[in-house]
Amino acid sequence: MIEVKGLKKSFEVENPKKLSEQEKKDPRLKGRYFHSVESVSFTCDKGTVLGLLGPNGAGKTTTLRMLSTALKPEQGSLVIDGEDVLKKPVEARKRIGFLSGSTGLYGRLTGRENIAYFGQLHGMDKNAIKQRIDELAELLDLHTFLDRRSENFSTGMKQKTAIARAVVHNPAVVILDEPTTGLDIMAAQTVLDFIRHLKTLSTPVVFSTHHLDEVAELCDKVCVIHQGNSVFEDDLAAFSALGEGVLSHSFLKTIKQEA
Ligand SMILES: Nc1ncnc2c1ncn2[C@@H]1O[C@H](COP(=O)(O)OP(=O)(O)OP(=O)(O)O)[C@@H](O)[C@H]1O
Image (tube, rainbow, N blue to C red; front, top):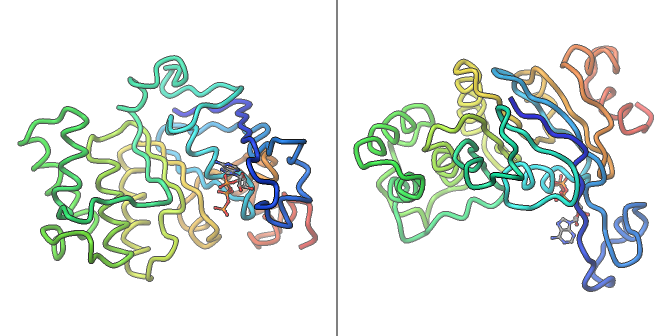
């Protein structure tokens, strides 16, 4: 189970001229600091898929990076299966599978080598890594390119390899930042099927997305972030009811825009 309470993170603005027009008007800009995440809270139980929604710049990636221990929150608590992630980040990292926005594969290595390298970093032995890659190749449909150098992979190949790499160590929880962005319909479906597979294993999954059809198809729960605050957290039925069955209306209502 993932429990996130009152997460907060701000960044010092190094060059105010580089802020977008929207950021300059954003109430989160306070003096020299941009408060990307002001207060985000949600829970995600075993076997639950939680969809993290929010307009561009709302603070989803910043939240997920805190969850994955890549960023340290200034305030708030983060607990996974009863363990305090902020007190024991090294132990927590073993329990977390995190797909970040940038796939960051090593181009000179094959897909298999990229995945295996992460397995080694997690202390897995050769046999365990081989077995796990076989399993993931089946689940994520990697067979046709697994042994090619990743520098020439398509976006879909890169993303599926990056997902395999993120979960090579069989993590207790999985966090995915926009896992289907830029993918064609088949690759996106493979990724969604993989999330469904994680659900059958009772693995909690938190993923950010702008695709409401994915939310309808997969999510048990929805959390909406708006201007750095979680403004909605409930099950899919409650989210759907807000917009009388039209999820785009529900979304707009949570961020106080007319549907
Ligand atoms: N390292 C940083 N330094 C300064 N500002 C940052 C930094 N990281 C994020 N921000 C700002 O914080 C805000 C939230 O960013 P974040 O990437 O978390 O949003 P998001 O909800 O993931 O957006 P999108 O849907 O566009 O991916 C943005 O205005 C962004 O420019």
